[in-house]
Length: 163
Image 1 (cartoon, rainbow, N blue to C red):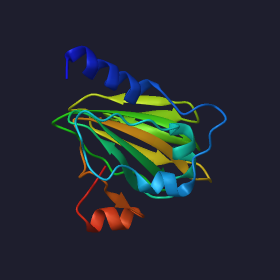
Image 2: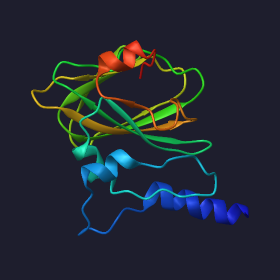
Image 3: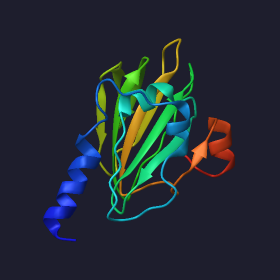
């Protein structure tokens, strides 16, 4: 495939959503891709997918350099303070209220907030609200095994996975 073709696929992955009238069932969120194929794009209404997600972590798609993950933090829950030494992270809030702690500085989060976390920044995201904090995350490079699902934070910790 040409570089122009790969750029086009990347644009579809990052920029295209299902039409406004389309709905995404819980089973569509849960199904996800069965394997990584470098020349395959992934299209999803990310807002609907994030709002439907009840799992602490659900990897939706893994490409060679980027990974799309849904996360839901329950009231009072956090992802845990950490630093990514090998890549960057982008977080977009779709519902709820929280805070992002970035190198010791706390920033409020709400529906529509986004956070870009460069490699090496010590960070945590905390649900400070009374309802679930629903976000999607882009990791570059991927941070979790493809198709990872952790229904709870406790399950993620037991598996040895943090953020």
